[in-house]
Image (cartoon, rainbow, N blue to C red; front, top):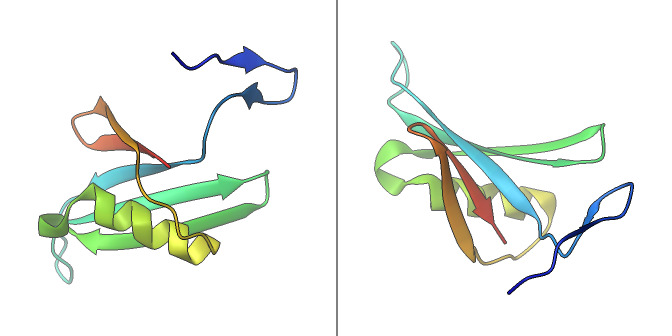
Length: 87
């Protein structure tokens, strides 16, 4: 079992994650997943994938924009349209 500890600035034992939200179709785009990875307060990396490709594909694309070649190790539903994908 993973041991998580609050250090006063971050959670020790945690890993990077992407928050992936579903966005429905518009007049110009079909439904898609948009993944976001934030580092600090000023850097944000986003990527999207078509709905049929799923949230993991969007998360991996955001990680690549971040400059990382990460493999998802967890995926948890936050609500019906949002996932947290852990690396």
